[in-house]
Each structure stands twice: as structure tokens, then as C-alpha cells.
Image (cartoon, rainbow, N blue to C red; front, side, top):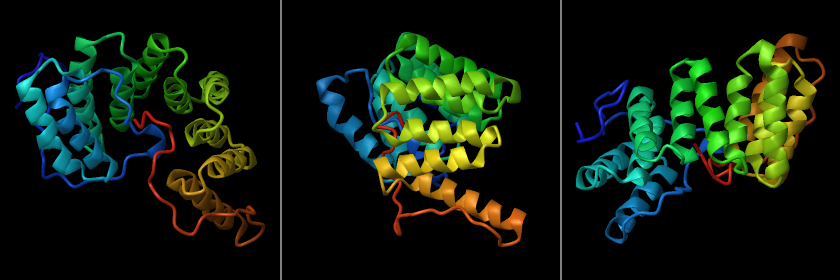
Length: 252
């Protein structure tokens, strides 16, 4: 295991773990913490590997960066992103906690921790981490979108979730991520037409947004199941969706 601050939920990284697609609206390409010049090329390599979905290949490169400089916040954040893509939430949470301990006022480690906690089913803690991200960077839309997704898991907090989604939309109406967050809240509230409209708005911003495409297809499929092939949502979908960045970033 890499030399690192002692943190909770520490799990051995597995470079050979199968790569899984990370939600585009939560991707974490933008790293707010500047890297040492000597490490910048390696950081860029990890970032590129994550962009390509090669999360298993990204883990050992990030690990070497951390071994060389255990206080490199950007490397810890990329490690968290890679482990999230590998579907190894405990390892991702460990990396996010390490980054947070080094730079507690940086919103990105909090967002990454929130993503990992959501994967672990720890919804309340995920919401708390997302809220902390919005405290650290109130003008960054990704934190508000993350908070909206987290709060949509709670039936009695959907109004608060909608407020967070609205804030993300206000800050960045021209990125798919805020529209996806609004769609997630509407879906949790049973407002299928509003959810479809939000996902279509995400496609209007980025016609190749794979997450919006998948959500709309899922909505359409559920509509057929409920109505036995009756009225369907009228959708215009791209024929070849991509995973590309839909969050502008964070995504995570």
C-alpha cells in the first residue's frame, strides 16, 4: 500500500480490477490543485487514462506519483477518480480522504468522497460531503449538482434537492451536468415528464451525452412496461452516444 496519511476505509488498490464507466456528469478532469512541474506529465497521463476509461491502468501511475510525493493532492484526487472508475469505492474513499486531509478547503476531495460514499450506500454521509464541497466553493456548479443527486435519495428532502439543482443550473446552464441533476430530482419525485425534459435539455447542450441518452432510454422503457406499449415519450436521441465530459467538469 502507498505511503499516505492514516485514513478511514482504507482498501488495497487493485490495478487489475475491471474498469467500469463513471457517470459523465460526475467526472473529475479539472484538478484545482497545481502539480509540481516534474510531476505534471504523469498527472496528465493519469487524467488521459481516466478519460479513456482505462482506470486499471491509471491506478499504478497515480500510485507512483503518490509514492514520490505523498502530499500531492492532485495525485490523490486522480487516484480516487480511478478507483471510482474501477468500482472500488472503499479505495476511492481512502484516496479522497487523504486529499481532503491535505487540503480541506479544496472542494474536489469532498465531491470525490461524496461519490464514493454514494457508491457505498452511505447516502447521508454522501450528502454531508457534497454540502461541504458547496461550502468550500459556492460558485462551482459541480458541488451543487452533486448535492442535488445526493438529496434526491431522500423523499423528505426533494425540495432541498431541487434548490441545489436550480443553483447548479443558474451557475452553469450550458453544461449537461446541471440538467442531469435536475432530471434526477424530478425522477425521484415521480415527475417523469419533467425528468425527460431535463434529460433532453442535457442533450440539447451536448447531443452526444451518453448519460442523458441512457436515462431517456430507461424512461422510455419503463413507460412501455407500465403502459403495455402504449404512449411513449417522444425523444430525439443521438445514434452514437459517447461518455464524454458532460459536467464541464468535475466528473466526479
